[in-house]
Structure formats: C-alpha cells, structure tokens
Length: 339
Ligand code: KG4
Ligand code: ZN
Image (cartoon, rainbow, N blue to C red):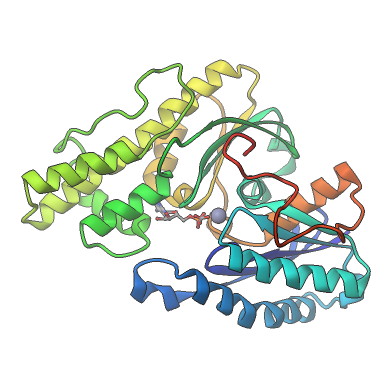
C-alpha cells in the first residue's frame, strides 16, 4: 500500500511516501529558517511558506520514488493540533489531491504520530505491545499507554508548559537564541548540575502529571536576585535546569512502569528526545527497554504521519473523509484529556 504523508502543523513542511507502515521510500522536510530573526514562529509567514513548499515537495516525492500520483493508495495529513493557518494549507491541499485522484484521505493527530516516528526506526520484533510512549516536544509532554498501534490512552500530560518549551524559555532568558533545546544541552555539557538547586516539579510520586512552569519561574527569580556574570555561571545554570527537567521526565516514566507492570518497552519521541543526556539517563534508570527515534524522525516529519495513517486506515477502513470539515474541527481530538 502506497501512502502519501503530509505534515504542515508548524514551521516544517514535510512530505513522505511509505510502502506500508514502515518502508520509507521518501521523506523530506523543508524547514523555515525565516523565523529565526523573530525568535519564534510567525504563524502567518509559516502558512505562506507551506503554500510555497508543499506542491514542489510532493512532485519531488513522486519523481524520486518513481511512482505516479495515480499509484497512491491513501493520503494521510496532519489535522491538528497546530497553527490553524498552517494546518489549513496542508489539509486543503491533501483534500484537493484526494478528491482529484479519488483516493481515501485520513486526518492524523500530530502528537500521536510522533510515536510512530520513533517506531519507524525500531526492528519489527522489538515493537512489542503494550508499551508506554512519551512525546516530548515544544508543544506537548504527553505520556500514552498503548495496547496496539492505534490505541492511545493518555496517562499524563503537562499541566502548564511543555518540556521543550521550557528549554526554549530558559534559553531566551539567558540570551542563547532559539530553539533552546540544542543550545541549552551544549552549555550544560560544560556545566556543574549541582551548582543551582532546582525545585522538584509535581512532587507527589503517585500523581501522573508533568509541570514545567515552576522551573522557569524559579530561574526568573534567581536571575533577578543574582545576575549571571561569567560563561561558567551560564553553563552551570543550564546544567542544573537540564538535570531537573530530565529527572522529572524519568521519575514519572519509572512511576508509570509501576502502574503498568505489563509494559514491554518505552518509546520516546518529539524534539526533546534528541537530547543525548536524556537518552543516557532514561536507559540507565528505567528497567524496560527504551527506544528513541533516529534523529531524522525526532522532530516534525511526514513519515510519521503516513505510518499512523496506514494503521488508522486499516483499523477504521475509513471511507474518504470527503465530508470532513477542515475549517472547524477534526475527528481525532487534541484536547488534553483526549490526547
Ligand atoms: O517535536 P519538535 O521538533 O516540534 C514540536 O514542538 O512539535 O520539538 C521542538 C522542541 C523545541 O522546544 C526544542 O527546543 C526541543 O524540541 N529540542 C530539544 C533538543 N532539541 C530540540 N530539547 C532538549 N534537548 C535537545 N537536544
Ligand atoms: Zn511535533
């Protein structure tokens, strides 16, 4: 089955062609560096950039994979969550193409698809369910219990900021630029994580929730009382913050394993899963196998959209979503409780 995946929820235009759920024939992302000078994504500009990149990328996918548009069996497109203007560009394009080709279209939840990005890099025999899947990105910190590729039970989510967002905010406070994760990680490598004691978020061990605004507020207050003067101060603060942020994720994952004792594996995805210190910590602390995605599938891409699209289509045998109203809603809810 040939699946065309389309991703346009934020500032990356992604197009992928998969043969079945995990054979990637083509996956490319056009990243929008234009936002760098604004220190964050400008939604209007992002939507217009998708409009420019999408059609050429789809044509490139077809010519690189040596397939014709009529050979596509299924189109999967990100339906949310994301920036509405950006989602509309992808959804309207996909809907138009599906209508022209007479092919089924499946709307995909972006957060859930991240899990399938991580699964893409894992050998089939190691993908054992039930598993726990953590998505840690700039917009979400979601932990799911999964009994199959399409069953997502939301176990925990952030009560406030997402983990990646807190890296971005701390980097901004320290004047380190955007996105914050990679620069904070780089600084943290030279720093002493014990220098600045940090609060422990969501202390109650049984409470399955994440929280990141407290760490950020603590750093705002600390900078007011004690401005950082040397490069070593900055590195130490990054190391202290990063350790607290990653310990919080690992502690809650360990608790979830206790609550779901049949768990066969942990899958971690989303931008923060690129963090090498997190990879080492999770592998050392958790007593079930931990899988991280190949770096190409950590951040936003369309291969993950196509892969989940395959499973969703198999499960629902969905007819074309030709009546799907892209302007007001999408069928796979992104609300924090439904995940
Ligand atoms: O999944 P993603 O590419 O986009 C969405 O938010 O959906 O995640 C981006 C987030 C940003 O907040 C970025 O700072 C964070 O992932 N990130 C990292 C690292 N690389 C990216 N956070 C910590 N350490 C990293 N190495
Ligand atoms: Zn994402």
